[in-house]
Image 1 (cartoon, rainbow, N blue to C red):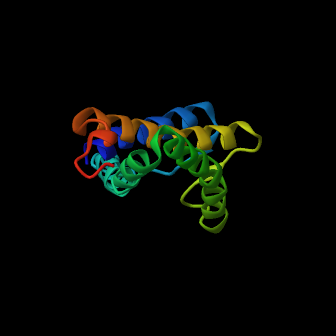
Image 2 (image 1 turned 90 degrees about the vertical axis):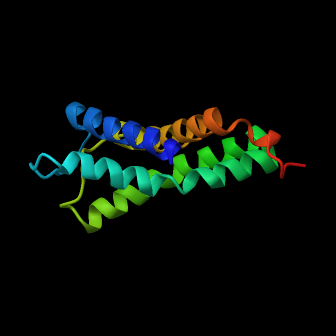
Length: 132
């Protein structure tokens, strides 16, 4: 959960930064609690990724984790663009390559940051009692 909380901060920060740069727009409600609710929802939805990364790191080492980060980075932007096309009130992307690269970097970042925080708290996956 702590990895999800750290990655949620990165995700909210990336959304704010890219909105300020004009790369995308995510409509937020103007209520005072919406940003906190959005952060909690993002953190909770990111948390299940990190047991997967833990298992990949335990089984395949840094190579498995690197492949996973690469896959997430490549699959994430088309997924977001599909959602933005289907539901334009949720998110709007600016034209160009910069929003695509920023979206991919955000996906890579939330995996790296969340896994790093989890590793910091739990220790290396290779030292787990179930590791070979």
